Image (tube, rainbow over all chains, first blue to last red; front, side, top):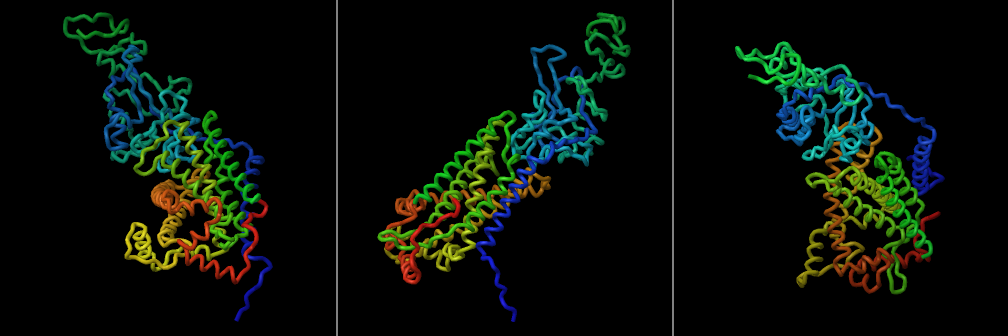
Length: 260
Length: 293
């Protein structure tokens, strides 16, 4: 029969050695990593889709918010919407109704602030900046990090995690294909076509790049509304007048159109 | 005694430093999360516990005049680091919200502060747990005396029946731990094991890209383990600190000793075992020490 091999160290010494080895390895890694590792530059690929809006076409019906909540959460709740419409009765047109949507920033502060990787760039789906709810610990750093007001990241008070626009990539309550190559609930439902998807990165100066003029002569002007940002120019394709009635002002010249 | 005072001083200082660091990190601009920047400390704590455990020379219970040594210095250290760490983890964990319990930490600053305090508690909890585990590994008899016997349930019924005034029960001489305590020990080990394993998965997600399904499962299990731990903790505090009959035991968790009279009355079987061992082995003259502490 084989003999027991005698060692020069005891079990206690072996465990002490393992403990000491572990301490040394971790301290070396932590200190070495801090001292030797150069600052890591994180290259984040640009999103392949962006939601743009025309706040001057928005009528404040909140359909986009309700549909956003519905397709993502299965219920119509303005508090659960990723896109936000804010009504300020005192601001006066065109600032009385504003739409605020995630900008899918080229350098997303929310992604960089997330300590767990929950807020991440989905490289398999058009580099959309989105939340993996299962990793979210609820620290709300992403909400705080978003440089825009209101924050384009919201706290989902029912599911207890951060949420933001994912271009409808994950919509458990909608059978349509979403994401940067598919449909977006807010775009589809908006009765005024005030929300749209673009694959071209908007201008990053201010909010202008994300607030476009989507008023067309064949569509918007036919309803009798001005198509320029100042609200002065009425398109040539304005609604046909009642026979004999005269517009209160010449088309394309001045003021808002008043129907006879 | 001087050495024990030094260890207590170091432990209290470590707690103060940890708390101050957690608060400071959370109060700076952009609130630093220690789980993110100091994840390495979570890995370090178990190794420090193992190392300290391997260097610790335990002292077995023995009679010292009119007192009986019940807890040596190592037992006191592992109990309070693990116990206070658990208490802090439960409070901060519950404040952060889990399962059906709504979150009480409102706003990023408060959430960061409580998360950092959770981090500090993890350090002490892991040290205490691994210090105990190493001590147990090196002296398995200490583990066996915690395990329930086949008489666990009938003896527990008798024990509490007597406490409630029933005279129809008689008890055999009690060992160091009552059967009810031994059964609770199983729950404590189970809850601690689950909390540690799932906690490591959650910490790993701060450093690596752990799949969401694994993190989600770990989070759920961590939360369920919290309930197990809370159940054990509340029962333990009630039976070991609130009930007047337990006060001599609570005192011994600070002084290390119980009176000989108490040992005779409550743990006759344990006292007999100690006396038998004392006759066979000379009693060491010093309390347990942690070399280099």
